[in-house]
Image (tube, rainbow, N blue to C red; front, side):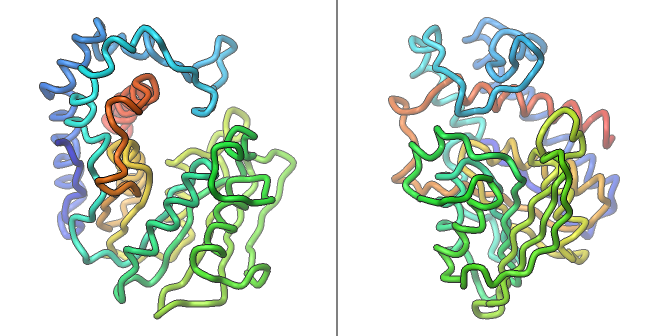
Length: 310
């Protein structure tokens, strides 16, 4: 199973970049990737044109929750499942080391944000100095409320993350301190929310990042980690443990590693999914077209890494 690893921060930058690039090349050239492309009757350069369900005809981007199942993939469901598994989409859910000093909860849908926050509570150790939510001011889609076990009156991803922290960690509501920068364009708004309480030395913060392309899109994972690295007081040599949904582990590793290397910050990174072994989606339950969007995004990020970092 593919699981990307962050090279030792004690190494020089060029050595770390080359080590990452070697891992990404191995992923692209893997037997599992070749078998997946063959099964889909496409190649690396053509998979986006054939299967990108997020791209709208007007050039806009469709939210993940709005993507409909692709029935042409149903007869390939069982054959695709072990290939996705080998590419690291299901089973990454345990840290590779206990030496991490900060926990990052990567923003997502309402339900996913809450579940990841719950998961993070189980990984807080005496070494952890902060648990930090990464988000933006993306409006909550009504579909998210229907599918969520967690209820909130908040209208944004940032608000949902804040409410999740209050619920999971027993923080005092409305007693936070905000560093807020407003704008008429929601994509430019940023905020850093700090709670006064600490649990065994662990602080709790929520970061809402602005987009680096505010006229085109909301902040993405890359923007949130960039904003975090610039504002969180991270010191060289620290180790970050990010928590996401299992299917996004390798994809979001790419995005986080890209920004870490661009920032020239010598820190370590690990990323895990919030679903335990007994909760992992089965071949009957998963939606193949959703996972193909992640494969497409990973190919794009690997190409971006090679053009922007190497």
